[in-house]
Structures are given as C-alpha cells and as structure tokens.
Length: 127
Image (tube, rainbow, N blue to C red):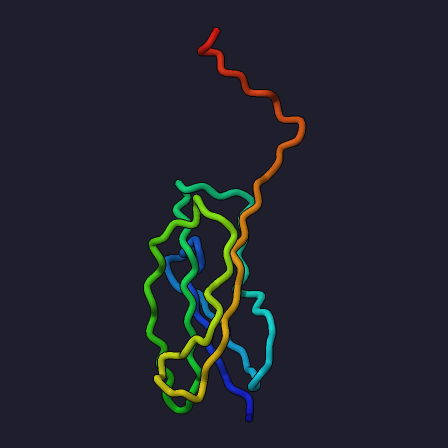
C-alpha cells in the first residue's frame, strides 16, 4: 500500500494553552515509529497541579476535504497514580472508513524523586 498522511491530535496532561496539540506524518502499512512530539514530562507533579490523563485521536488526511473533530480533555487526574500502559489496540480515525487503522501504544510512568542529604524532619508537637 502507499503512504498515508496522518494528523495525530492529543490533549496533553497540562492542557497547555487550553487547546489540543497536533503533529502530521506519513506512514506506510506495518510501519512502527515513535512520535517525539507526543512525549511529555515534568520534574515534579502534584494532585493540586490538576494534570489529566492524555486523550489521543487521529485523522487520515484525505483530499480535498479533511475533518477531525476534537475530543474533550480528560477530567481524570494523573496524581495520585501509578505507571500504566495505554490500552493497546486498533484505534480508528473519525472518517468511519475501515481503510485506516492504527495501533497506539504509550506508557505513563511515575518515579519518586530522592533527595539526598535532605535535613531530617522531626515532629515537635510531641515535645
């Protein structure tokens, strides 16, 4: 098969700018690759920061008319949380055409930060 032109769109955890993000790429049937624009990281997060799970969709670019409705951002907080993999599987575009399907696979990981040489904390209420 020939190359497909794909617009990948997603709501990042911080919903920065209150808009979804987007990247465009071409792919062939069976091709696997990483999309660096999709990566997101913060050195520290908290529940108060109100970061949400990502929401992802795509559209196969068809000429002369393209239509990719926007999905709403998630309301599910990332924190507290634990490392998880996306529900791998076929994801369809919005054109309701069976010709274009993709497998989207990503991991959200959490890592506790260690602070070496941090001062000891003591509860003075007991004294």
